[in-house]
Image 1 (cartoon, rainbow, N blue to C red):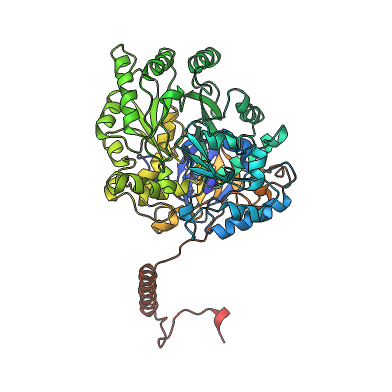
Image 2: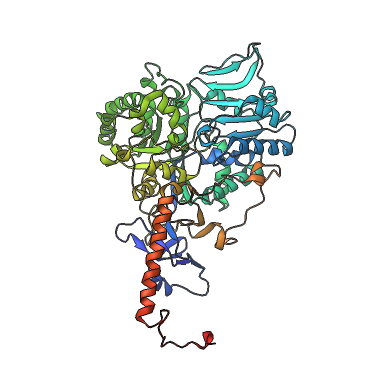
Length: 610
């Protein structure tokens, strides 16, 4: 393959810009201009004209629940990008009409009430009106869920159902559940309720996963680090991506983590996995990257910013230390879900104890995820122990709740991306999709650059934002560092994987609000065209139809793209002035050549003669 006539941002400081790329056997062979690749064009070469568009290294989401998301994708109605609650309810009403008896209509993450013009959640009454007989479950962040009457019945909630630990079933004056579930602060009540809905079986799981990966390719994603998560059991829930990898049907490179699911059994699980596999087992398409994002349940905090910060149990460190020691002694890296500095400080104390025995730093990659309130002192300790960070745009969707609870000063540094980078830490960027944030990486890139939520609230001041180049590096090469693949991924240079995206708009020049509206027109992974639209439509690989046929994805698609905000009045005036100046320059050019009105041209073209 050859891609020519492009504005290429390579990510390689040796040659940061180029015009063309040549690929053989999935690896880049030439990066240069059109003349450099011309000699590599033969009868079997697929030549793609980028038409002067921006081309970037393929994006790498450093924290995405891609395995779990793929197993459920075709069952879920996506409100990602939907601009009004009215539209969202209309989608539910239409979907309920086609959903067969026994199935649920479910909206699971990727949206916030703040993105709607109405700035509110749906009511139970609205869900009952939209779907009187079909169960409807709508998850809002890690804060709450709204269920209609049919969903309460399907889930088995009655006046006698006790509140689970850390959760609340909201009840009316008659004692009956109203349809509202609250995380208080644990989201377990939300997850366990969702787990009662029907799941896909057999080939449908593969089809769902392939369509989810294609949806990620739509935005230029070529790699992701799966952060595991609750209700994702190993090896059962990993079998679908393993089978797709064996068949050569993955369109996204996946590095995955293993997450102990049962409290009190974590050490046994980790011990068994260490005997079964080693980090980096696999290949460039599917590989083990370590443990996490939880190692022990007692050490996990919650990120429900509508509730006070949870206070973790005293003494969790003893079991946590056993888990960390086991991993480090056996060459396993890990990642840790840690929202608050209070949690991070306690974990670091355990690491420093083990460092005295020589276990830190030991060459095993490890990192903290999220870290919205991490302190400068904790970042210094992370750096001293050889750790890294991974941040996600959770505050794109929960920023207003964070601001109300912790105030503008804390929100300005949540998370302190600038302070992380100043210390030379590797900082990968991701979305934490799909159950909170959207999987659209451009929403996250917009948040990194602008500091604004999806409701357009400015939270982070300039000192805690990053420029576009840095943000892109966080979404490309930094993720490759976290999986030990930075020699072959995240940049476009000879010898690296041919993972790239041709964009709908130039990321480096498009107005800042429109960063969130960028999509890929052509996505290539390992030299394979895995997504193609516009002028390139039909060049990508064919997928089986979405199944089941009643799937909301079959009718609405995934992310609901919204129109670009367009040009501001000031920007319109600026561009109009540029056009006028160019017009005058062109008139002067014609006048110098005797071609301006009122002068006799020496150029004769019989096609225009009268």
